[in-house]
Length: 397
Image (tube, rainbow, N blue to C red; front, side, top):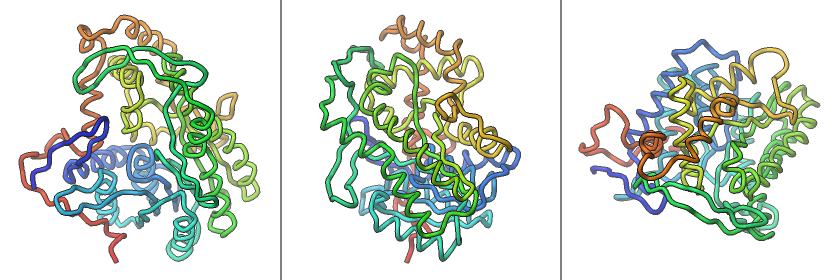
């Protein structure tokens, strides 16, 4: 079939297998072009199919030669319906890993459930023995609590009062004003339950109890802070409350892991185009301006550049891991440079629908969004027939 992008709101409902593979291969080639990483030997990546989780898996495997187990919740193709992008990404990753002689196994299911945690533990015992790195990079809109069965749904809202500011429709380039009503207490509680640290802690506790964490094992989760422009809807909103909980959890997990000589950290990463960030009002306009400024200064990074730098300059650089006054790893250091933020803020005040292309990189944002789903990748014939039924080797019975 010929696969074209189809949209429902800010979600692309189709994905292109060859485009996804091309994007994964480009990330792999970037890592292979760099010096080897003195990193993990056996890694568990929870949320391994897209974004920072996928990039972490690629750096671990192709930078450090690590054997990896990836956890995700993706949908295979069915009839004329394509698989999700994360499915195709993982198929491409496993194919490349097999070619390189690197063990790569995957589990597809609800990472919030006790059942999948137990499956992962049994697979680690059988295939890896122990793991020395646990990456927690889940991004999900909902979570069923494994103990109570309660369904939680996250929201992206400010807290306390409504928030009004500029936003952009990156499909049309229309710059407009948006008002977001504040969350109530129940919505705040739900968002913390979905996006906070409880599930991360459940994973680490289960792995520790099962004895599948190697001495000196480390665990890392990902967060974002960003500029004051986005704080009301992000860092000071419902997501920010969840991230506060995640960061507090890191301190608790660090104490637990120190008993086996390990550590837990939260890495604050750069703003990038993801399915999540594309749906947050205000954020796409900020990212479009940020991309333009960072590209003009030669400082722009994507997921793979960020994760390679995290592994080589922070986690596995030798010696103590550098953190800020709150104990956070800051790999958003380039984004948050004073000169970058000053220029972005000036453009923010000036930008409108007429000068959007002049002041921002809205085209770069749009293209990165399409590439999340395997579209607009260089060297792919999007008029050609392709088979949407792609298998993930380690998931075949």
